[in-house]
Length: 473
Image (cartoon, rainbow, N blue to C red; front, side):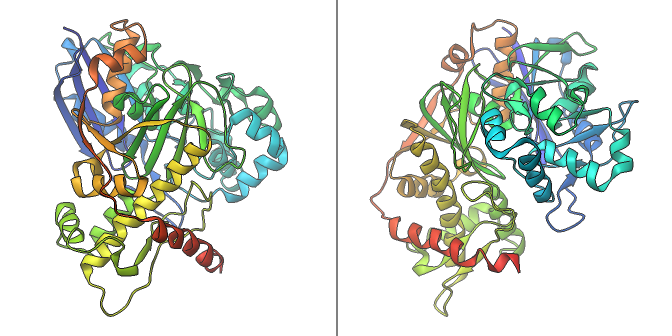
């Protein structure tokens, strides 16, 4: 029976997962690495830390028994390499917000309407190419050394195979990818005076891009959201995936490159040779982690969840805005900030805990509403990633969404989807959809309890509008 390895280069650490062709998990390993915030609104990592973490994990596996590898990881990051393929400076990450001026520059130099027609998205501070322009504008000596730019997972591909390559789902988040036609936009690169040679050859997600020194095929893989969606079976319209990771993502497969003209939702190439739409909030599990580390020291997530459950829905009028690192969808506002509002003397730590869960859930509802507005079908909502372990949170999401929410028998995140893509790459299955039907099994479904959050959600949306100008002072 074939053995398939998935490698996920996450923000807080990497994960390596081995499955067989039934979808059963045979072995896994993980390693953590640091995150650097050298200035407010900046977020960086050393790519060599990713590689050291992956090597640490791989040392636990018998590589001679592995048939194929898929790679995935945090999207949008910029790894700058020189002529000797050495890292020039720390990688600038997806949640870095320094490139506001460069996003405006892209609209000015290419034309706002043309940017959206080509990329199906507005220029966003998280995307890769605004970071490249920032380097040219602010670190010209470093820019002069650049010979290639890789996404995080593709740097690991390069270290594994010696091949510089990417695939369509991750390339869609660079800011210069022709999403409808699934190729680099020479028109945008020319307008921005960026050499096309900086960017690697692009493949479909299941295509073999190279081999390791042991001769193991390595497929294109996917950005963490596309690979995660493969791992949940969100590869055909009707299935909506809600990922409760560091960021929060509401995701659906679509058959055409339809995009949100307002720019509030994203349309990217999917790993199934079609497309997907998604709403992304920047601080989902990240907001919960901040709350644990700063206001709930000594408590773990289970304790915070249990405490929150002791209070009534609505947190007695207390509202939490989860915009701790700005916000992507629906506001596209790098200056958005978090807040607790409505505090009074009757509120306890338990109310704060519930308000955090509710505020994050409202942020996810923003994403769901965006997709429904694009005509997405919601036959089934599958909740995944770390937060899916909390029945309390799943029930809250079912109530906030007003729809049943399901969990999966195997919820191992993007690494699981990357491993499935590896199997498609060596023709274990004829396509991604068949692979998902063969490996992914539902576990439980939680129906709405009847709790009405609609009034509090309206206040949540109004609170952002009221605080928006404060954050620019």
